[in-house]
Length: 243
Length: 261
Image (tube, rainbow over all chains, first blue to last red):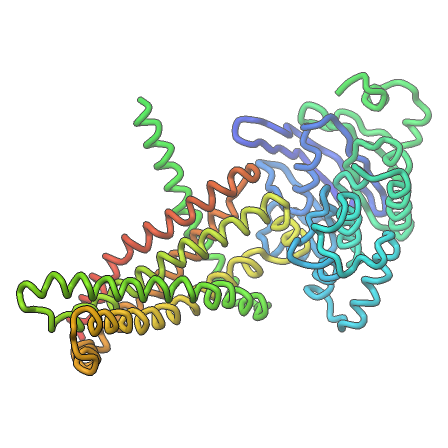
């Protein structure tokens, strides 16, 4: 049915049940906004979609393959086509910006060093990071680290991208820039899931929204539905009436 | 009640540690046999573990050799046994002090470094990023460190053996008034290859006792920077205890092997 499909997903940490029964799917080229109050487990769910977390039960299907049964070596194949943009960038602090971006290219492609350089320079320019390739992450601002992390996640041209709060902490100019990048990738047919609290961005780039509450997806609306209707649980959340 | 619950929680932690160490060792062996192999990362670790530990190891070995020579000399002088000092110092250094002291020094310096570095990488999601980018933290982080310890520690032990005996010789000549050529000849004629091999072979096991628990504790950091400190302490204590306990059993094992041979 979809490129990504989550069925009867259950996850707990010790005695705390985070997800009771989560179900949703995302079709090819679609962007799903995953929203919900703080601590409902949006990031845990997103991490589970590339096998960084294992569910207690249920299925996570990526192109009809259940990744919950895969070992780390099998997951490598999935992780080459599904990219994850970490909230804080998760850059390697012992490497420069250039080396951070070169990392996946050196690991998974047969490009030579001049091709890698060319690709990285153009990717950095797209994210407004020209002239920063020789800097180490420690000398970048939080927003720049986040953008480098996004650039690294996208450099392999993945089929699916999982964004974990890509615009949190960014100024309006860079927020708009990230929105444009997400829309550009969407127009190229890249499937995406966006975890965010930034509602204007979610409304600008997503095709549908799933609202996570009490361990379940309690509402799933398309953006058209959201614009059409003026009441409902997602509206209440967006207006700050419920957590 | 408190004692029982403390013991039970310790037992649970110990069981997790044994299981986790077993699984980590299995992954290391399994992934060591598969491509890719990160030569540059391994060489970097050999430099960090081997070259940069050399001053500490050499100072410790010299001091140990000197102290042993002095103490044996002063103790045996009363019984006219001063002439046995070269043999005693040499075989003690080759069999025990060289490998054990060098390994303990390395456990403190390198083990702490491994656990804190890897722990910090976990906290800042760098380990997750390695996995998310389709690569293996075992291959990139653990295997280079394990190999660096396996290559560097035996070489450091060999150096510690030489420097320790030189320290003993210096004190033997300057404090105990032994002839330098007599001391040297005694070391050469009374120490045999078995003395050397018993200590040298232990160093490979000690290398694993340092690298694997340190990586294990680093990788299992979960709740922020406070746990990095705890993991570092655990890594040093566990490695040291494993070296000291393992030393007895390995000494016994090599003794049995030598009896057969």
